[in-house]
Length: 500
Ligand SMILES: [Zn+2]
Image (cartoon, rainbow, N blue to C red; front, side, top):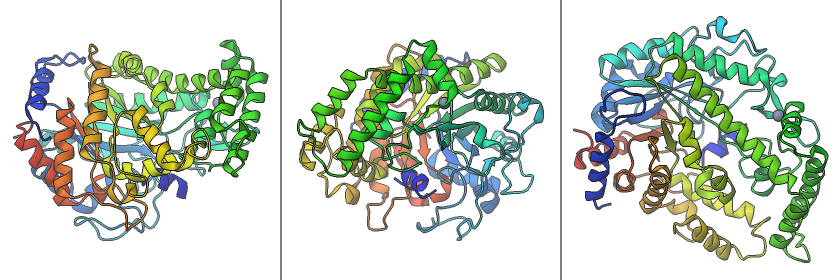
């Protein structure tokens, strides 16, 4: 699981922000309700309410950070959004001063069996807090405090879940991966059951779901976030369901598999330091020209994620049209030009009320360093590392520190401004709102790396609104945040008159 943890542990001009805010407020949200306060959200898990007391936590969140919406970690097997601080990282200045000894995860609400009739996945109740149902516990209290509640779920699984092997992806050699397949009916039906359960069983204001993954091409060429490691043979998905879907799309499955084997050999040679005679960049393209099926397979994988979005959206809206449905768009959109190309916000707007666009400034430093280190061994292998980073900054359209400095400085508020602005412009003309997810004390890998500080958090919050943010999601979880940094978010919001 360490790669899972690593994967996660990774304005000043106020005028335009205020104008954007007024524009946002004058619009009627897509859910048909009259415009109300914009979302100032925070991600938080059950443990914080148990450790500190529900009413007390809600008071802190409102007073310090003007929070009016909770993104409650409801389904996950990961410690990125649930549980206390990740072991080994500094504990915050609130809550129980100890790490979780036995975090397990799962569904922190109550699975109602009638919604899981069409799936082999039955036993997902999180055992961490006995029979506690986080939604049942928190929703009435939040309503009393005038706060909205969204369930927040992600596709991070645990190999010990009964029958999980039946929904796991298959790698290039047919072996089970740790990740689950979006084209597997038992997984799809489970996810639909879970979302229907949340929607019908609780008085929620919205749903957020997220998947932090690449397809097989991304994991071979970029690889840094693959939970099954950097082995280019451990990429997904090649299960029978995906093969069938590929055939239905007119993709020659044998050619695709042959292409991925060729790409695997290329990635392996590149990563072991063997420069191809004709260069890294050229020989990658040579393989792609020869096997366009590789890209068709990658598109199939990404489309399957987006089809999952669409299915959840339609399901929830068909039951409770007033609920807001949207997605956590993971950090890869800021680093990977391939993932950014695959993530067309105009297309996503057809089945998204909002996007939480991840713009973690501080963690972004180590993530950029890791991304460039990895791709400089493959697609960018012809370039010295500083020129690879220069190329990256040019094509992704922001400019930050040099390679050796990145982990010690993080990315700047200007990064948050640029990425928010890009997202808002991409979404223009659609009713979809952009709610940047900002970094408040997300655990960094090394204690010597940079940390969040109140002055920078204040600037980051301002930068998000200068970029046109229509809401905010304070990330990644309250149980790792320092109160002074939370207060810096609130100070900035009050100063901009976004919150009182
Ligand atoms: Zn599959």
